Amino acid sequence: MADRIHAKLNYTKTEEKPEAEEQTETLKRYELELEINDFPQTCRWRVTSKEALEQICEYSEAGITVRGTYCLPNKDPPAAERKLYLAIESTNERSLAVAKAEVTRLIKEELVRLQNSYQYQPAQKNRYKVL
Image 1 (tube, rainbow, N blue to C red):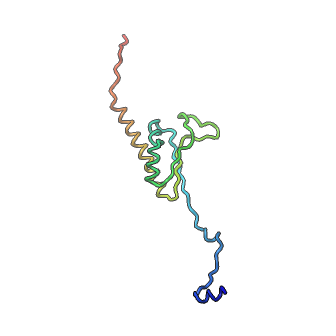
Image 2: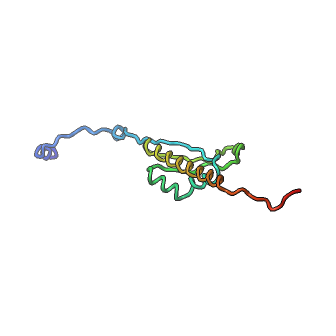
């Protein structure tokens, strides 16, 4: 009976491929790690603030996660730990590059701001003189 219905509809049966063969296209994942441990505290705060991370993630379509622990300069991190870094993940290389560029731009802006603020501070005048 099914054959008669197929004949009326001009239906021809095609061979089905196994599902494993259909899903050969895999999703690529790109990762990048930017160490921020050795930058000044204000730079680290600026880059790791919730607002900055949300803005960069939305702009670049990449995911950014703060990982590791802060270690003092010239000190090694505790065992099984890493220095503070940003883990950037994306499904394409362009998003990864845009996120990296935006993070480095924020760090450079903050470094320039810090440098300029130190240059324009008036010289401290001592209150007392030693004779």
